[in-house]
Length: 187
Length: 201
Image (cartoon, rainbow over all chains, first blue to last red):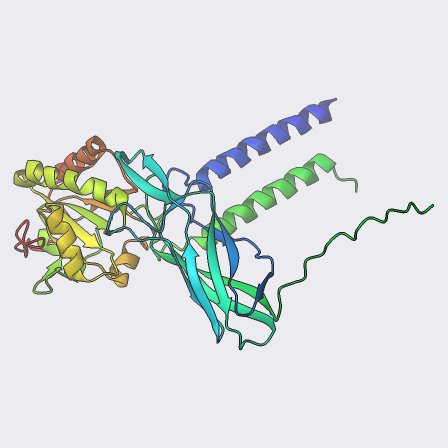
């Protein structure tokens, strides 16, 4: 019985010490303590017919509590989120489609609407392999430039490496049609 | 010899806590300032930074005897932009009492662009072009705005990260102004290199 009481007392003291240490080491009162992060989702292999265009969707996710400027920020001096890609030879990078920014006002500027992305967003890329391109897999590399802020502080512009592959084919993949139903019932 | 399992558990817990504490202390080297360094009551690191027009060099020690609001900012930082008109007003209000606001631009864009921005914002205090060594001396300014309030004796009275309200900024200024100008290291008060508004103009 005594031992149980002593055990509980020790456990209580330990928990108190742990809480004290956690408090001591945490600096959550400092805004910007957590670094912003953008991650890119895995891109499924897109099949593109040579001589024709294909669209690749790149999905990004911004860490909770942060936002980045959209591709068309509301002010001249703000750094837009922008994707730059290096295409393999004879594959043309066409139009890059950015989502519209979310119009948001923040506690630091309640009267000022900012055009931002937060949470998840998708950028569409049109790729067009020339007819001379040999069928096969081709890798694209590039960078997503962004500048993130939280509710009270902003972080210097950063670049996220971007990488995805496409599969170039000679002819469009054949349409698989359901075979016509036999009028006879086979048993 | 039979050992009490409670004692063993407690000893293990204490060792774990000591390890956590030790690792945390080891990560934070006191000789290298970082974002967690207090700076409070420490002499603000001196610097020599060029003005936006590149014609003058501003030393922090030039302002000894004045209370300095040292603001690290950038044109791409919206919270910084919110603060700037307040700094303009506070410079007007407390300038006669000995306040000097100094902006340190952390932009990658050209000083000309920064100067245009500052002019459009009606900035009436000097702005200098920041560099990495100064950033490091102030704990590695990893995000903006970052503002250091420095007393007349050159010692940091407060450091503030992120946007604060105007009234809070005012309180920090009052505290810095109240700091006596009796520097332990008797550095003579140098003349101010830039008159207010010169950098922006």
